[in-house]
Image (cartoon, rainbow, N blue to C red):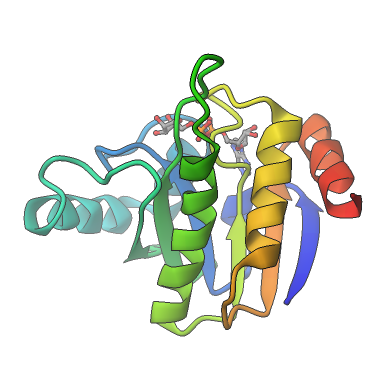
Length: 169
Ligand code: AR6
């Protein structure tokens, strides 16, 4: 698998699947989630509502992932995952790692080869960037998958640099 870093907007990525840093309601929010729903259009939210009704009435649990189509995005699929809110008193790293592992598992179920990830939990959910980057890169690197192109799409220079450090260490 080739891992690359891109500075930019995940909604513009021409990949098979983009990962969304969602919340358990699956009904949208700010950050990456807001951008994906805005740019992808209402088809994504419709499918999220149906998934809630059929499988996730109590919400998609933290650390899990589920796919919808991608509406008007250049990608074909959106894989929604729910990162943990950062806590300084409790180690939630396993849940953050699970987001990447489960997203790759869903990508394998879809049979796709290229996946773009944002820095899950490193925005509104408050995760320190270097730690979020270390977990993201470490987990994607060590997961057995048929995905051949894993791309981290970083919105800010700070995030890009943190992922660069993680990738080079
Ligand atoms: N493309 C790539 N990265 C982005 C984009 C974009 N268009 N927009 C923001 N980022 P966040 P979280 C970066 O807050 O911390 C939502 O309300 C951002 O700079 O999107 O997992 C959900 O509904 C940061 O580095 O996700 C949840 O309630 C990273 O993406 C909650 O936020 C993740 O920031 C999830 O919070």
